[in-house]
Image (cartoon, rainbow, N blue to C red; front, side, top):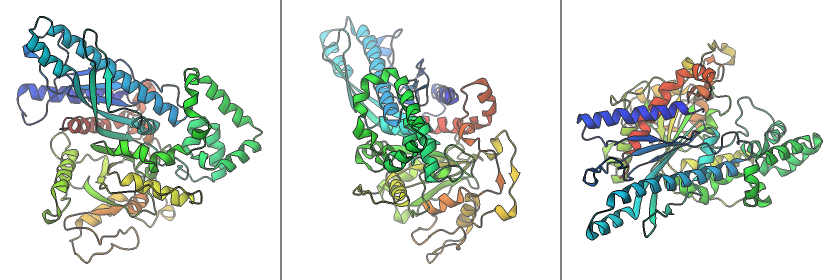
Length: 526
């Protein structure tokens, strides 16, 4: 499917780390015992670790309890992407939970078999071990899969009970959220975030025609009057199309009571950004990472919604690294407390590329937002679309994210053309903006770098480069060349068919970096 190359890249990354660990070259690195991939395929991956390995051909004394990573590609939403984010997220949560149950049940059964013949004291000690398991889980969601994942984590329990044959009492699995990663996901929806601006009335026609998922993405549930007008204008034809698509999803009809008229009237994109029942599970992950295409290369999911940027937001983004330099200082030593020091170490580990610390040429920059206290605003029907988007952007930023801005212009198979001077913006692109900021000597009285492409610098510390959400929203859309916007499939090396695989092959290094970073971070869980 579209992210099958990433699954293969995960396999290679884990195999390389296993080889290094077995050779004893890098004992300080957390190693991996083995990789096992499930037979199903899809968009998200669940990474589990710290579960007792299979012991079919091993003596009990030789069981190695080093972490094991299982890569699972889900398939529950294949061909079912038109019935809305809620149903897709509900299916995903069910598959993840059932996969964990099934996998641990098999492991515990194998463990119990090896326990037969041991004396009572050994059995008692073994039962204490087997009846309480700990596992971390991490998610990678691409495009719509990222929204499915955000909804699913609000449904996944942190404790799962399973019954194992010949084992009493039942086994409890304690799940710990680890890494949450999205690639080109429309976190703010696509309303007011289309590749070319279109009026709201046109958004309503397009979104309604795309079924429940289209209504969710264009946030039409918050404009019920407009949607009704659109339905009347087209003579009810679009409504009949939506009804046909809903009836086509036969296996979800039995669960239709979960998505009644009350849910249908809610804007799920807005709720997932502002409602604590969705923010709390996302906050519980140890890290949150968002990959976004920069410089107008993504037709389906432009940069602003993929990185939840807003031109009215002054939320600070601290630069971790960029492709012009290997590493920069994040903060002065004087200003760091213990929590900030840990964040700095995470930043440095994140930018390592194959161990040499270099930032690949396709990575424009990696920035982070700090976790901040945030309270859910009171709902108001009078909020303008701009005000609502600002709140949604700020609420997500307050969780603390790493944002990776990718430039695939040289990897798109169709050559670009130079933009005429009269079409170019007076704002500077992100590359130029970062170069200017990082090469200028620090002065405590600095306030900005100019009205064209400037950024507020009054809060930065020595050695620190800070850009606001507003700066990033503007600078990531500036480019001197025009390229066919194929970045949505190129960045993830979409390989759902042989033709797609060849067309998007230049995006494989991006996924290789993601897999290397992801595996390293997964194993750093304590």
